[in-house]
Length: 564
Image (cartoon, rainbow, N blue to C red):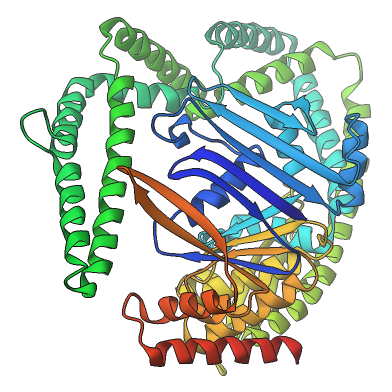
């Protein structure tokens, strides 16, 4: 469970020291106030990728520290294996420096980003508003089903046999050639391997080079565009820019507040606009400094990309697959060296091993069928509780085992996809053909709820998963998040009053300006503060007594529902 989070010099947050509690914690505030920055800070603690641009303007480093307690047995075993004794509390710290360096520590002991990622996976699970798009990718449905059914054992057993079958097949193909053919193939493979080793292509290198070439080619024009934009924002010694003009406008409006209090919200909005413009100016300045016009570097980049293009054409693969192609060539070359076993013996072994693979694939299929039935029951129950009473869910599993020639893949012989019907009388169809945005959010929440069982010691973070949800459905989403929080700590970023009212603890994230700088403040709200924030979530800036009264009634109603 996340007990405390300390953030320093990250984006608009100069310093924030937040104490969290068990149960349902909600973060709310105006758009752009810094709610997502808090989620990004937690992502940094989990070893996620972080750009140095996240460092607050004018500072040399940013720091995130998190304190966790009530750790899972799995986490405790991992820490023990690393020689770390949490002694009741676990402190994870990460510093991001302006030169790109990262300093990570776990209970004061230096750690790598890989260790942070391994540890973070046992401490926090983050579910974002775009996770619903994952559901539309049918290629990933088999992984979701296997995760739900805890099918690591049957899948691992199948994968081991499948790898053995592939290796045996390579040996058979090698022995099936004539001696002359084998020599020709060996010479060709040796040449390919030497060429690929000399090229030494790294994963992701092609995209990096492509991006660099685009920056180099367009660097001069980009520099002019960035310089002109910065001039418009920052101005010059003789002419103030947009930021200064907005700040002067805010100053005038604040002076006018004494004459007419209705000017206050406009002053606040102008303050927020000038702060956002200052952030844009800082980021564009960083981009301008990083532009490189080196003709030598452009020539080297073009040469490297041409080499990759030749290799891709020769091997018939994409650039990202070249490192894997090198390994495949090496494996084929190794298989040619082992020609002592007779082809007859190998074919007999292949027949027997293929039967074992088929048997293992059938066991995996049967386990998936059982898991699919259980998953259907759980998902439908969750959807009914999320205001989709007529929803029907099914896991469609199609296997090639019954066909004349079964097709074995690394995942078995099954293709898996999720089908849904949201209204009575409608047939079950693929999610991409059925679900609207709001329905997809609720389906994602239902799936996350089902798949996360057994993670009671982990903190669940929901970052604006209420996209496209409103009205009664929003109330049901709030009820579901509160129910999840009964089993594990939940942190939720939301803009909906129906969800915020169900929180055990509500934090208000507010952006402020002082002395020309923008700051973010985090405040744990009491009852009166919650009522005012719920009213703001409901009505925006125009809050009336009636709105406040309605917000109080919503809070009272939610408290009664939580006790029921």
